[in-house]
Image (cartoon, rainbow, N blue to C red; front, side):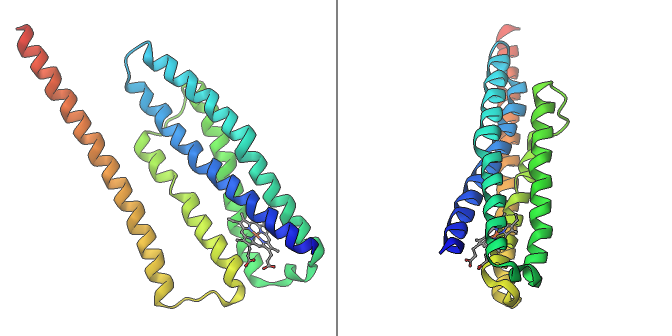
Length: 195
Ligand code: HEM
């Protein structure tokens, strides 16, 4: 019974953790893009994003991670034999990467707060795909365990997810290019009207 409770809250924990991780980097993207706005909008937007990022990280994302890990410890102490399973060792490698990503987001947040972040919005969009891959691998390992299928179906799922991520990146790039083109055209029209 205790095992099922731990598992239920383990799942609730990682849903909260991932919701926080995905939204956090999306806020970083808006934060970086606010640099293109004229003053005073730029400062107002950046201050607002900074507050939202801090709250999201401290109130949602980090507690989500702590609940996931605490419940995982509960699961392992109830069924210590699971520790001998190969799938868990691989899963732990990916969870370690995920915790590293979580801490890297905290570093980015601090750099954004003092205007020292070197990532542009396009790079941040690509970075936001990293947890998607980790989520997929970790959940597949947790569900299939040592019988993780490696047949065509899995490769088709992987390829579809990569394709989706690449399409999102290309679409964002196109939207940015269109916006820049429109801004340049408007500036030219304004220039022509002045002269
Ligand atoms: C802190 C490291 C983690 C450890 C030590 C751990 C360990 C475990 C263990 C022992 C189970 C029970 C397996 C079973 O009885 O079927 C489990 C279940 C599960 N874990 Fe984790 N886990 C960790 C992190 C995560 C993360 C980050 C995710 C999601 C991205 C995740 C997703 C799942 C899922 C979906 C299940 C349910 C699998 C099922 O019932 O079929 N785990 N985990």
